[in-house]
Image (cartoon, rainbow, N blue to C red; front, side, top):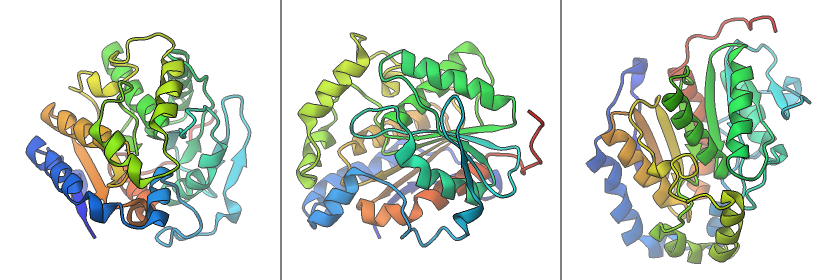
Length: 302
C-alpha cells in the first residue's frame, strides 16, 4: 500500500515533520497518476471519503450509541462517555451545512474514543459559517477537553477555527483532524484538474460557482476563508487524511508542509485511493485524538 505519512509518535512524542518529507509524496503521487486513476469504482469512491459498515477496523456494537437532537445539530453519545468532546464539522461537494450524512462516521468515532461527538449545522456563507462553528466550540468547552475535526469544507472551517482561536489568544482544542480538506478557495491547486479526470462526478466549474457563493464577495486569500494562506505558527497538533486520487489532495499536502515549517506537529497520511484510505479513517482519527487528549474522565455536569 502506498503511504506518505508523517506521524505523531508513541507516548505523545512531538514529531516535527520536515517540509521536505511532507512534500516528498506530491511528485510521486502525480507521476503515478495513470496507475492511481485506474479503476472507475475507486475513482468514484475517492470523491466521497466516508466510513460505512465495511470499515472492518472499527469494532463494536453501535446499537447503544445514541444520536440526540440539539439546537446546534445532532449529538452522538457512546454508551459510557468520557468528558472528551469531538466537534465534527461536516462538509460535502455541495458545500452544505447539513450534518446528517456524517452521522455514521460520528457514531463510530464516538465508540472508538468514548467522546461525545457534536455535529453542528452551520450557515453556508462566510463568515457566518465560521461564526456558527466558533459558537458551538465555546459551548463544547464547558463540558471538557475538545478536539476539532472535519471533512472537505468542514475541514476548512475546522482549520479556520484553529487560526481564529490562535489569533484571539483563546484556549485551543487539543488537536485538529482534517479529512480530504478544502483549504484554499482560490481553487488553483493542480490536483483539481489532474485528479478531476479520475472522478466523473467531480465538476470543477460547479465547485467554483459554489465556492464563490460561499465566499460572498470575500477575497479568497483571506486566511479565515482559505486557511492555506494563514500564518500557521502556534496551532495545535494537526492530522491530515487524503487519497491520492482526491481533487483536493494538493490542499492537504501544501498545508501539511507549511504547518510543519511553522513548527506544528503534523500527522499526514496519504493513501493511493479512497478504497485504501476508507477502512483507516475512523481508527486513524481516533488514535490521533486520543494521543493528544488526556485520559478520559467522567463528564462534567452540564
